[in-house]
Image (tube, rainbow, N blue to C red; front, side, top):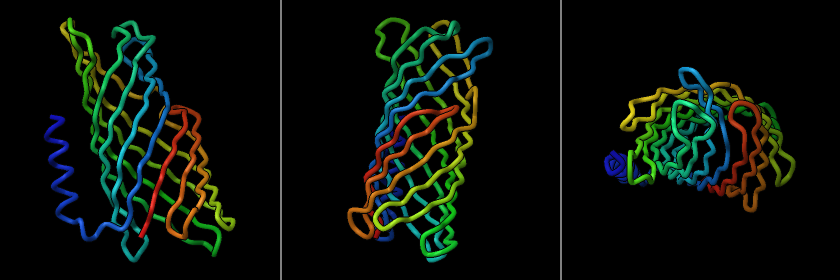
Amino acid sequence: MRFSLLVLFLLCAGKVHADWTGVAVEIADFKSDWKFSDSVGEAQITSINFQIEERTEAGLSGGVAIGYISMRVTGDSEVDNRRYDAEYLQVFLRQEVSISENVSLHGLFNFSYNTGDDDESDNSADIDWSEASLQIGASYRFTNLKISPYVAYYDIDGDISDDNGTADFEMDDPVSQGIRFDYYIQPTSFIRFAFQAGGQAGGYLTFASHY
């Protein structure tokens, strides 16, 4: 499955390579509560991904990302506390609408499929989940700095399987709030720091360049 995801990503990237208008690398460290059938566990996740996107004249951007996740699921009575390694393939759509020279509104839709396993030699476990998110916010530009508060809604559907059976999970609290700071080192290149609280809480660091 992981090899298939990588092949799909490379095929997509190669097919439209000449049209890509933006690239980014994102590093994230966050946690969220996952609700199982009779309890709630905490997922502690560190991830890194590489994104490429294409922007239309109307301001709509679409792209794909491939990433790696190191995570730990703890505090749940149904599933043993374990550490997992996973990969994911993500597609996204992003729209920005200018209100004035320094103010704009933005929306972002993400969908990703994640798959991985743990490092146990006995009774190893597989983890698979899909994640969809919708983010809406506003941006305020001051010279080289852009500040963007936002709200986000997440929908997660997945399961963990081992020799003892399968445990399904979903996100316990789907709503988060955050703020992004984009510092432009060039007119089209920036470093982003994002901080988020709520159902999915943590920090994000992004290096991006748009052509």
